[in-house]
Image 1: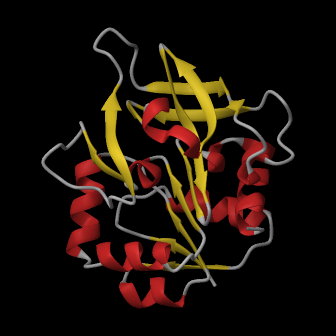
Image 2 (image 1 turned 90 degrees about the vertical axis):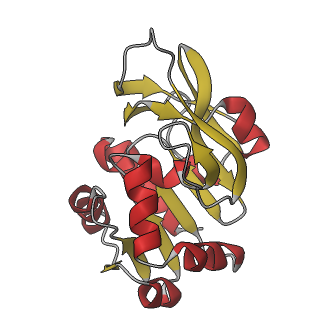
Length: 200
């Protein structure tokens, strides 16, 4: 079962539409029991890092997410859902992320135009599974003010984007995948990214 996790503020309808368009069956879940039934997990994210983390903790699913990831269940984090994989974020430094990976999510510089919103090009790193068959110069849709620095993502970076600085636009490591961009708003290319995840 593909589980889309609902923490109360995710961009669920667009993600559902994408899965519907490619014929994938899924369930919306919002508790540990739903996550434990899942063969694959998608965590969408829009809004504020603090809101996401507080909601996850109020629902009592932080450790369930960590356990399912450790059990090698394929996980896809979208936007904030990817940022939650790291230790913390400058957006809510008093709160801890999932801590699957070390490092802090950063805010774009004060003189940058934020949010970074619109279409931008990906620079693929090697041949990531998540980005198969998307072409050599894929353009995808972004909407964010915080980012994972390229050096924090390290070898996990599946794609780099440049917006004043170079940051991780996608990550993958074993069963864990994340995208800073929104595949559900990236047309046919975004659908291909979701298909690639479901094939993992």
